[in-house]
Image 1 (cartoon, one colour):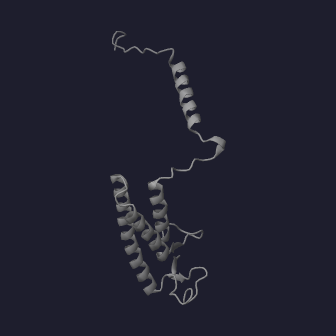
Image 2: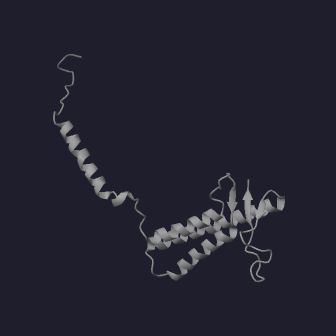
Image 3: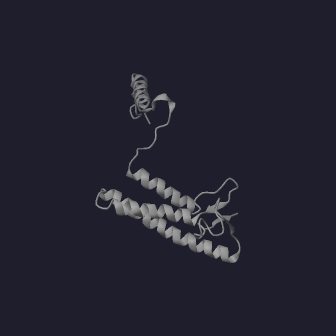
Length: 158
C-alpha cells in the first residue's frame, strides 16, 4: 500500500474535553436521582408491588427458598393462604384494574395455582414414602385451637 492509499486518521483534539463533560453530566444526573440521607429508596407502593409481595409469600411457602441449613421448607397452608389472598384481590378489584394489571394478576394466580398443585402432589408422595420430615407449626396442638383441626404440617426436606 502506498502513502496515498493508506487511510489517514483524524483525531479530534477536543474529544477528551467532550468525554469529561459527558461524564460530569451523567454524574450530576445520578447524584440527583440518589436518595437523600444514604437510604435506599423503597419500590413504589403500587398494585404490582402488592401482587409481588403476596406472590413471593406463596412461592416461599412452596419451597422456593431454603433455610440456613440448605433444607427446603414447604408450608402448603401458608402458601394457599397467600394464593387465596391474591384471589380476593382479583375479585375485589374486578373492573378497576388496567388491562395490564388484570392480565398480570391472572397470570400470577394461574402460575401459583399450578405450582401449588405440583408441590402438593410431590409433598404427598414424599410423605407417603417416608422421605419428608413433617413438623408442626409453632404453637400448634394436635387438635389445633379450641378443637379446630390442626393448621397443617410443614415439610422439611433435607
